[in-house]
Length: 275
Ligand SMILES: NC(=O)c1ccc[n+]([C@@H]2O[C@H](COP(=O)([O-])OP(=O)(O)OC[C@H]3O[C@@H](n4cnc5c(N)ncnc54)[C@H](OP(=O)(O)O)[C@@H]3O)[C@@H](O)[C@H]2O)c1
Image (tube, rainbow, N blue to C red):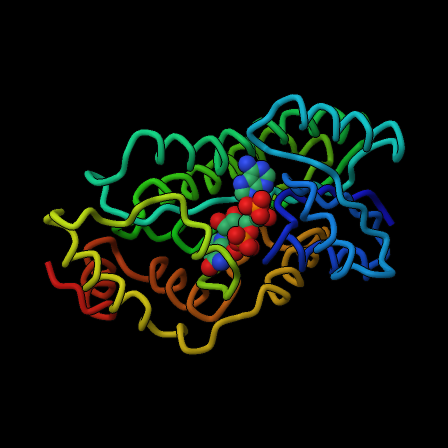
């Protein structure tokens, strides 16, 4: 079994992915950005080959340190799981520059920085797998989280573009696309939603009510199910794009089957959000 580096393991999908790879017998380097998260990882991963490592994906020094230590100890990193991510809810107009930059720093530039640090070692070793944690909103653009949506669309494009560049070096690119998953993600949003006087405030409320009731949202997949899909994504015969959760599977399928105008009509109808 190999060396697996996962970002964002203090909670949610990353923590469950650490458990799942650990149970497969891999040596897991579980990225956390705060010392106190080590106890959470130690408790959830008790008895498994999972080692917490301090890693902030927006901090180049911490990326270089973790990658160098991993390669010194294990020779290479066989699997990189780019899971760390933050969300922001609010209209395009209401979102501040500080917030949209933070979203891209973490969800896009962080993924780019760590992937660039790891790929040379995968190439030298003759292969590896990069699993990016995208989102349903990387396939389907939705309102009121425009920068999060754009960041996850960027992850989809990076995954596909890198696939062409790296496949001859034996490197597999994957993107897992969860729908809504019950984690701490919603509690850690970095935005302020809508100021009291915002003209978008009632629209945001209306959209959120409709969006939370789209088909599949009454049957949420747990983070452990996304973790199972992340592990399965490392298999050589895995598809490159892997929706996770019934809501994601359904909506992505509809997006593929309908033309853009028909899909917009469909989405507005199921989310009860007319033009
Ligand atoms: N939950 C959902 O409904 C959902 C749906 C689709 C996609 N996703 C994606 O799934 C991934 C995991 O999210 P989750 O649902 O498991 O949420 P979560 O429980 O909030 O986990 C997010 C993780 O990312 C870490 N993180 C944030 N900024 C970081 C940084 N700069 N450097 C390193 N780590 C950082 C957090 O660490 P701290 O504890 O230190 O903040 C936490 O460990 C994200 O990429 C998210 O976009 C989630």
